[in-house]
Image (cartoon, rainbow, N blue to C red):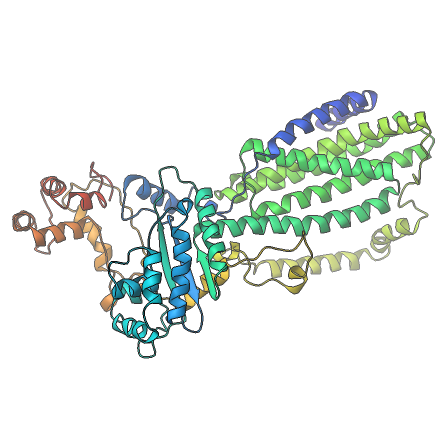
Length: 601
């Protein structure tokens, strides 16, 4: 028996089981639906869209190793919130008081865990009265100080980096003005403080800032994650009703019977429940890319459902009894459904080998969802249709319009035969048109950009009018992240977070190790030539050794004795130099750049 014959025999046995025991099939599928419903509550939302794209990459593995093996200065700074104030002039007395009023309310709440705050308002207030350590005390200091005195203090701080570092690059000490400022609020958080906790803290601070007059907002990773989650929810809220409405229109035209329509909608709902339940049980997070999955499954499910119901109707019109009509219809469609399912699963499933986690998860979710769609529409829907029709006949429920759609004599049927007629009378022209169209599409597709920026995954800065004009509950949330990021990039100079980390593995007790570590800094070109005089500003175990040598004459002599080429970098007896360094007052700093086993730097 050939493979094709085996598949045909297997599908016939499966179809016989469906039409001969439809109630059993329905019960099994309803029980599975209840099981998958329990997984929906476990579905998580991935709001760190771009982080997932780095999983498994060599650079990400190096960064993970740095974070695991080294502490400060490579620790994350997620436990801080930026309070950003923009306007015509954020250095007036009233503008500074607005910052302090926000800080005062934030400090008054224990759940926001404020450890300290640094910004232009705090610096000005403490310059006037150094004893003012809390936001409330600083507010009272500024309220009791004249506007003229405030301007004088601001002008006197024009050379203070702690002050100017919080201001936009357009800061003018003569006119005492700046268009934007940043106040950094640091949080004292316990161990196990999660991203969700940080998100709640930062969104609360943003709400407090929004209550103040003027353009004040809070910014941080928690705010970004919150708005990204809102984007996913808003997208589903806007897209899914439109998709469901269009599909409902197609189903009404195709079925023209409310009971058949209800069966089709129930099958679509079960498909979505199964897929989301699988995501919950498997731990695959739902992200922005996943929005396409339910739309895809609904489209395929509608196609399968229309085929099943329509072929069944065609067989009943021929005079077949219900069971035999469904057996004949499903025998003809089962092979086609299997082919469609297998090819689609392989198409999306190919993404499983991707190194990018979001693409891999999208492939898994799509492939599994398509399989669920086949099972529900290929097995459950025929069984449910048979049982419902028997109940209809038993209780005398009339059929509204069960004629097959697109019969040869119908308008739709004649329209669907148009491509066949064209290919029959002008086959060459038809093939030429298809080839030209395909070639144009291929040429256009070759220019598709395969890269992306982090900003591509952020909430939109501006939304079209047709989106902002939607009524509740479809109205989108308010997004500030992209606008805030653009403001930071446009008005503030480069910050210290824009650095390059070089993670090096090897035996750092070998004589050439430190020389090799310093080589990239000695020949820094291009994007690395950013410091004063066009050179990089490195910090490493080499600079720690050199710094300690400047402070400790005995250590300096040890380094000099082992520095063969006289360039300030020891070339031998490195194990002895490390032992002395780690035992000295610079030991803690040395541990920031070299592991105790001297294998990673």
